[in-house]
Amino acid sequence: MINMVFLGPPGAGKGTQSERIVNQYKIVQISTGDILRAAVREGTKLGKLAKQYMDEGKLVTDDIIIGIVRDRLAEPDCTDGFILDGFPRTIPQAEALEKMLSEDLDKEITHIVSLEVPDEFILERLTGRRSCKSCGRAYHVKYNPPKSDNCECGGEIIHRDDDREETINNRLEVYHNQTSTLKSFYEKSGNLYVLDGVGDPDAIFERVQDILTK
Ligand code: AP5
Image (cartoon, rainbow, N blue to C red; front, side):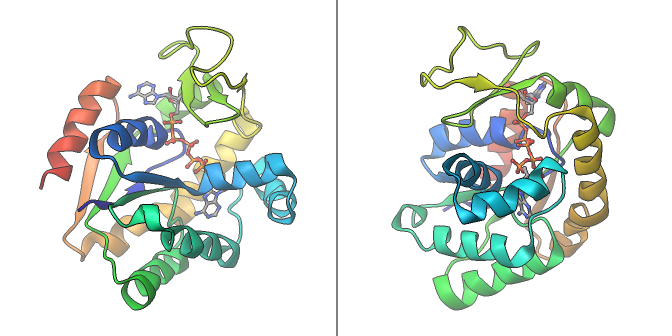
């Protein structure tokens, strides 16, 4: 069973690696960023609220995010395993996750993988990223260009609003101030794996697989 938490700065490659993990291990990816972006697209109350935070590169409030994840983890497709991509991002979110898994859902986290990429790589990765508006798949103008104007799923390929230089700097600051401390939080668990996220994505996936077979 793989119930994984994927940590790492914005643009570390969590989405890129999650796609490979989902294909290989047939588990579900729960990306809080994708859930929020879908709500923004649909113009829901949540979407309108979240958009302000996302456009500024700030975190959406813990209570909103925790509620979303609790509901999603209770869905039947999570029974065979899941990747939490982009959650938790704060200590209160990590504490809420532990509580909901043990008290409500009778599950536990098996792997916490922190994908490490220095800041100097992040700007190029995110300013060059292009994303599918429908399925969220990430491309890169230089490292992984789309084969045509549209995504393989047929969706429109866009430049995410929060992938502009100023917002990227805010997101990195938020990561260093609030999210990177989660590594200390998880150190005591014995399930934390720190992984070098620089290099060829397929080579990184081999390192991910080494961890997931442990
Ligand atoms: P979210 O969508 O979670 O964004 P993020 O964590 O900032 O991560 P990204 O999706 O930007 O990057 P990634 O690591 O998946 O990288 P990718 O694989 O695409 O969150 C967005 C916003 O939502 C937040 O700012 C916040 O407002 C809100 N939010 C979400 N969750 C929240 C929470 N829990 N609490 C509060 N608020 C929350 O790769 C990036 C690029 O690099 C791509 O172009 C890719 O092709 C390329 N690439 C990937 N791997 C490599 C490689 N090895 N070498 C070269 N290029 C590579």
